Length: 223
Length: 223
DNA sequence: GCAAAAACCGACAAGCTTGTTTGTTATCGT
DNA sequence: ACGATAACAAACAAGCTTGTCGGTTTTTGC
Image 1: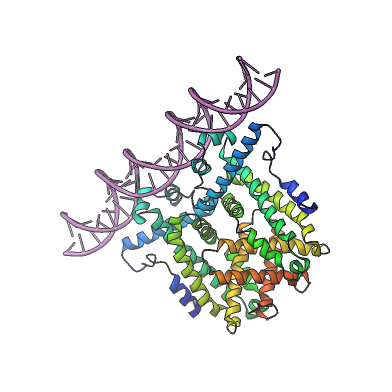
Image 2: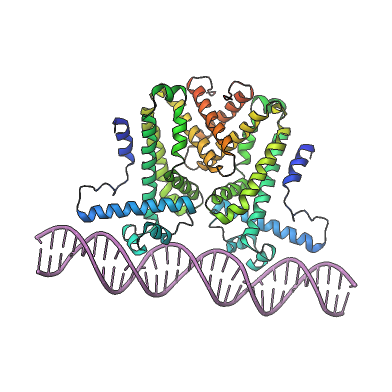
């Protein structure tokens, strides 16, 4: 893992899941928590936030509900951890993908879009998006989600530019490209069941092309 | 209302709400149903699909739950009507907006994007989007939502091109532009609480610009 | 070893949601 | 005018969800 990844991941790494050198109980606890978080991700993806009951999560995780409530006293505690965990894992996947690209593929073919698109098709991002949309109409969820989401966007913007050095000279354009890619692809994800797959591929390519033009300065904005 | 509007709206007009020349009971019934639908829209926007209980809708509508279940025997019946109703009203707003544009504004300044964006900030679209995302994880809702959504996309694509005659020569590009605008703006709507307003405005302009380039053939796709 | 703490389990009360059912008032057709 | 029908109201049962509580097993510190 190189410098770039270290910085980003260090900022976003979830707490309470890194006790690898601790006692037996600590490690057992961490393992159980990860099992719970993975189960929660599955449930969020399949059933959505409001239908993801603590009962269901416990069943999928294969432990009793009482045991789960020992690790996460309330549903909010659990969801807060899910947010951190999914953000961390998605960033991990995204960075791995971008780092694996050759410079030419990344710059000329806008392959970063493809990586971003793929990272949005993961279980983790499905769960994250589910929370994002649910937070818009659930005050309790918004209270724990929005601060984390804003922090995440900030970290992503500030650090990920190291993975795209070709944007260094144009920070505003980079910020726009980042938001733009996220918005377009998230909109695409939402309509995945409605639109034909071919249309989705074309759309994805179009987004990549327009970002390429933005970078080359052929498609800008009035000041 | 001109020809264009007539065609589109005729295809999408909800059933059971057009009994204006009927008996007193009929008109009363229609009025009550509209009251219920408007209440449902408010609830969906504010609380999301899963928290929009029949109890809550009845309270907001100002009638008893029993009375509501007389008009809509089940929650699914009600939601199905909400889908048709919101699609109809959004299309109405959108068409009114586009018709009010001068040709120059529509073609050169891509003002259609601004209209589309504004139509997505309405109560009706918020409710529709809420149903769209909820349908992705709720099989019962998906059963009534997806068929209607696909029909809506088809009607929109087939008929709305009359409002944008400058695209007539390029049906593929038009289809792409349509999907693209919807995806990007819907993604923008979803992140509305997370991103700064200024960034949202810039993003909206960028989407308009890239569509303008697509129309001028300066930004196409490989076959 | 042994007490304390942590991991884990099962059951409970309180509240909410949905659809059904029974009853009341107002309007329609003849 | 009068029976039928529609609009509306209220109460009920069945099921689900959340958080709390007492109890059991396993690990840790001494």
